[in-house]
Image (cartoon, rainbow, N blue to C red; front, side, top):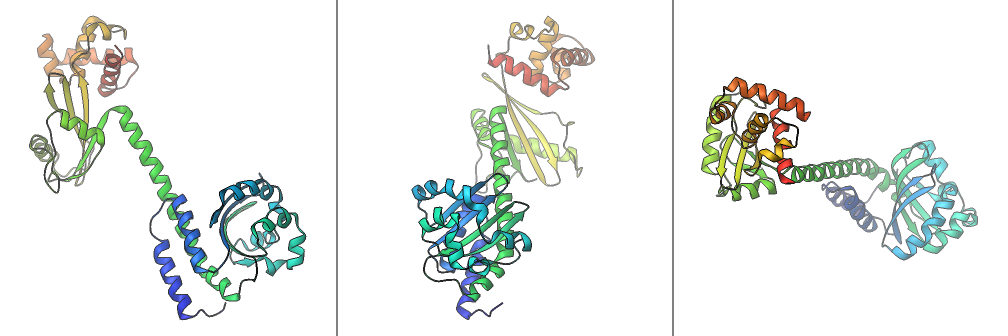
Length: 361
């Protein structure tokens, strides 16, 4: 390994500082290609995912020439197995950077189909590469391509120093991509469920809200105010009473009754999930327009339909019992039969079925 100059060390330090900025995978590839081009002088920097078993290649360039790249991709996939560096890559598992000239003379390289059908058209006679990931018959690498002069020993040194950082940055970027996909799926699920979430600390300071939560709070006159934002006074008072009830227990509580906010157009039900100093308020709206007729279609008896109608509007068992003139225990017995008829396991799922039935009337 050759010694690097002060200027080369300085370039490496700046490169690494920028490389570890969190990015998703595609953004990291775009950034790395551009940054590598400035780090080692060359004509083209390429990112390559090579699947030899299925003869599939993902190939990105900087500077890019999409029409040429797309035109040449089929030829690259047909001939990629001929690349003279592949035996070295799989033997060393990518531990060291490699030049084509390390493993094959230029004339021998130029006689190969991969050169005649691909590298010749991108003016590449000399190539230096480092491997980010390698598995049997598969690898991911970054290649530096030149037309007129080969790469020097210190270029090997730079890439061998950078390789573990490329590996870690790629792992970070894939994790960011995975989390981003999960968050997108989570947001989509929330949007489809019509349930809003507000995250607060124990003092009612808002950490984040979903769009649906903001819409529901505005609809029911619960506007978030102040910087830093705090939940509205009605919710804050309810939270304080909930916190007193919970104490320091680390639970997701099903014992605390929900806060019900009634309006002419429906009711907003707010439930609390609590862990340590983080509170999640789960907001869900229930229509006041559920009819007995709509619920009877679900196979309920008239009395069961009445019970479910009031439960869906956020009433507790004692409240339903008072409205219908029956005991709280009888309300619970009706609910158990409702769960069986609807094929659900709990109160919340039964409310969901009732709400969905009302929405399609």
